[in-house]
Length: 628
Image 1: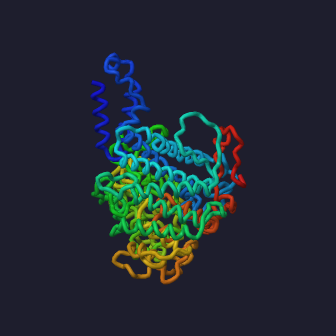
Image 2: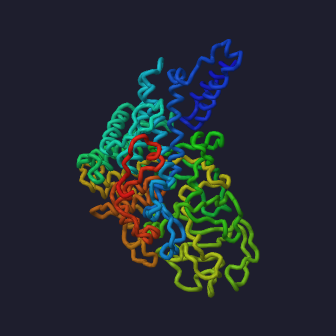
Image 3: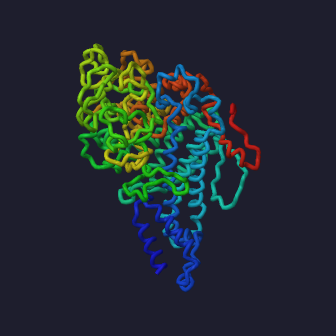
């Protein structure tokens, strides 16, 4: 009977989506580990089955390959070292940055940003656990008996791509790093740092081999690494090596040609979605009118090259069970800034606006890079008004003001677009003297600032960044169900444009401006071809001077970085962009209030310190990165 149960479980696994039900695999392993004491199994000799012997079977090797996917759910949740301390995200309370004496570590890059900083060890551990899992697949492949050789090669190629991605993240963060290429089967405390150039050479060799083997994307096996995944990653890796940080990556001008070549392959195979918001959960701005189903999204949109998958089953929607991770599901709806918990007519712990933890606050510049009138990304990414969820009779909008009655669904707070502030008291709300609107009105230069005695004017009031917000899910840090698109072809257009700016030639679409403007025009929709306007000095929240961000000739790296912010904001890549282009110091000082106020960011911060735990555990002397 137990043998039949094992066969049934294994059969069910083969029918499952790539890794969404990976916990069943754990159940099988637990079953193998616990049934040895039964008389029934002694009679049928099933207890002789071990993990090693199971992995050598086709079914076991398939399950082993599935196990290399879930850990990326945890990796993309470790975003402190990717999003904070950049020009995109910082701590909140911007108006306090200039007068504060203590700063958030990840924005300040001060003395507390050292080898003991916890996010360093967390990300390091996750990346190297993924490396070892993929190494296990690669190492054990030769011992698998009875499996179709072509299929086995595909599975090994999947592991090579996911190992390459983990190593690519690590080598960008830390420079020279350990590079284990076989399964770890015994304790070894020696930590050998391999030169970054050798790591890049290995990554490119593995991705090239995988790209030649892997199949094209398949709707019947959605979620697996494919040829397009390898091509996309090759484009980004070649582009990064071409920049050749500190002359340490082994890069050359030909790398930019390769980056363009592989970007063109991705562009040809993965057409852009018709609309930017087709890529994200669909919703309306006023939650009291929300009728959509939870997590409504076209997860299989043709633009998506590779996504970290989530689902609506709470039993199979977590990250890795060994990570002691309490978050179930995608949490991208809950970690960005601002919220609606303290607006008039709010409901504590409501799913309508859900929970906002204010861990990643968009910098003041970010709103001002979009044309709020014709760029559809502005409308999708930012909330320009908050609404009451329940009646709030007798609400006092400000000290001494006349009480007003607020009904569910009423607008209670409006964020004016940066290019169209209200200029007279009559256009303001009842929260100020002379205001006439039945809701508060905040101009761009008032976002996130403590002013007056109003219930609306405080350092938590700035537009919600709700690019990833999902309607109807339970109030929680997690519970999100939409797949997180780690690679999509819109980025390939911008990779291609950057490669051309750096000297590549022969692009299928022409010059850098052609690639760049394709993304701008998709965002403009019916206004494609128009000149979208951004603030000329986005860091100055009082300036109304505007300039077009359409490419009308030469494209610059700053233009591409601005467009990457508009298109890819929050998509797990910003620090890597600034590291690659060596613009981190200039752009963080310019746009991040806390980095600017601290004044301590330096060239050493283009590399992170090796985590202290690794240095302490190593049996050999491990050299630390310079300056730490």
